[in-house]
Image (cartoon, rainbow, N blue to C red; front, side):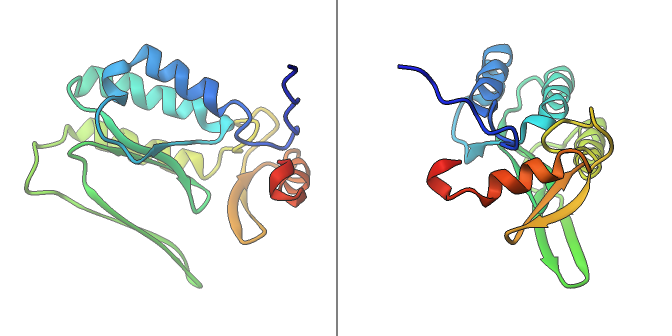
Length: 165
């Protein structure tokens, strides 16, 4: 049985392979209870960097959730700060609240996570910046970070009926 060729605008075409590669490289970071692991292909290099740093600065920690939200990467690790993200007419807002019930977090890890999340807001979620910087676009109510080259591909993919994506 042949596998269907993914649409060129599918930001998640490599998702299964990307998650599997990181689970193989960092099995201890992806075990235990979790919510989900799903990020656009263009941000895979950012998630790889987060895994390498987590392995170095807090080798006993693990990821609880890695995802895209409001056009940006979200990295949640066990014992990390509580996060509140919301979008209003005035823009996107994110707040972190330090947890008192867990171990203290290495400051360089928290700084790196914040930096990678900020970088994702300017990194195309499809090409990873190979075609230029990303910027916020809205497609069918979803906020996506895309470069000028990839935007029409993403829009064409999102215009397909759900079962054909």
